[in-house]
Structure formats: structure tokens, C-alpha cells
Amino acid sequence: DKAAVVATVGTGRYGRSTGDGARRWFNPFVGARMGYAYVERNAFIVSGEVGVEIFKSAGLALSASIRPSALIGKNSEVVLESGSSLSIAF
Image (cartoon, rainbow, N blue to C red; front, side, top):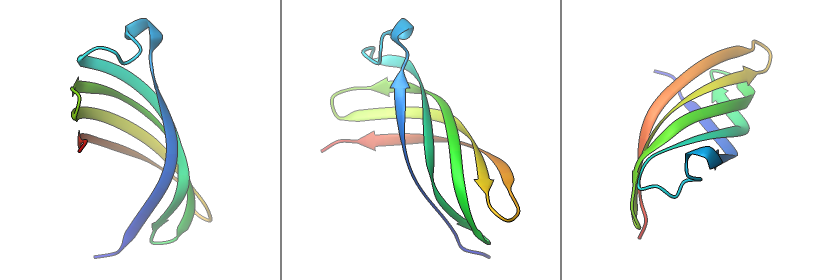
């Protein structure tokens, strides 16, 4: 019923002890993001991310992650987002 917008920028890293992202299967990663969110009101958003790149090849990557986020504003909230993504390079 209501509109929501989240725009963030961030960074992520693979673990050196787990192959530094060079493996084809199961590369764990961590990351951080920050930006703007509008979910019924304006807020600053700060997020951490933990995930695994399930598979990757030269033009394809499949990953799953969990991202706890803090919406900081007049009425601050903490949210947990989980998801998966399929990236296709062309």
C-alpha cells in the first residue's frame, strides 16, 4: 500500500582464509553499506552483510546473504533482510 525507497552504497570482502573469493563454489563474504531510506519517513540507513557466493563463473554469480540494518531518524528501527541474487555479466 505504501511506497518505500532504499538507496545505499557499500563494500564487501572475501575472507583470505577461505580462498579470497578465488573458488568457483561457496565463497563467504562480509560487507557494510550506508545510505538513504524512505519507509513511511526519511531515515539514514547503516547495514552490515554476511553471505555466501554459492556459485560463480566468468559471467554468472549466484549468492545469498543476510543484512541487519539500522534505520536512523526520528523513530529509529532495526530490520533484518535476507535474500539471494543472480548476477549476469554481459
